[in-house]
Length: 270
Figure 1 (cartoon, helix red, strand yellow):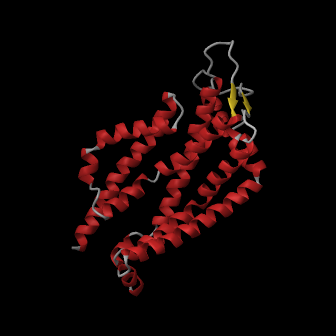
Figure 2 (spheres, rainbow, N blue to C red):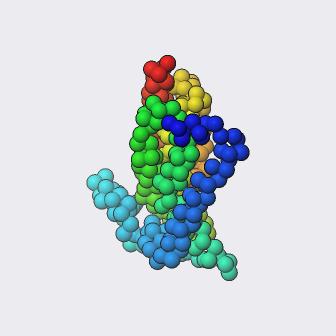
């Protein structure tokens, strides 16, 4: 409690100084993991980044097996009919750096959130701290589920659809390396962050910015916003947008329940 009081009595500049150290430690950990990813480029690129380009990718095998029961074979193929090429002198090196930083951020995310939580926690009263136990575990779980959903569902379906789409047999698909990697990395990271919606609502409800009534009243607006966000982070095909929108809508409903529980907890403390 003394530490909490000390933190509450700190000036604004002292709070900024404290936050700076949390951010610096987070940055160091992200960079360390980014260096590890940079060194292990064979695993990061050949097995992970270019995994959705291979016909034996688990998602394709699952949908191929599933389509055999409905009389179709759209996901059964021997090769993805497009080539990746680099158009710039520094293109491959820049993508190597970019992917390493994204990988570092994804791997270090639990630690980064832990550092942020260490900064926020002293400002909470004892009952709020107790009710917030497990928040790091839930945050990590949701982020991991989002990353896996993006990588194993959205990315391969987008690669399969956009990589095989052709307006004419006269056109050969040769995809720029930057375009492919940006799609894989941005979709994977974005879905991981989107799955943090219940956690964001939890903290916003704690400070009184969000209420269950507000979330219900603006549900239609939220649906439009989620659709727009899905259109931004996914390739321009309806299937990918729907696949992103559905789980986020479920998380929005869960967020209403979370906000209601927070409100009840605050009422009980009065």
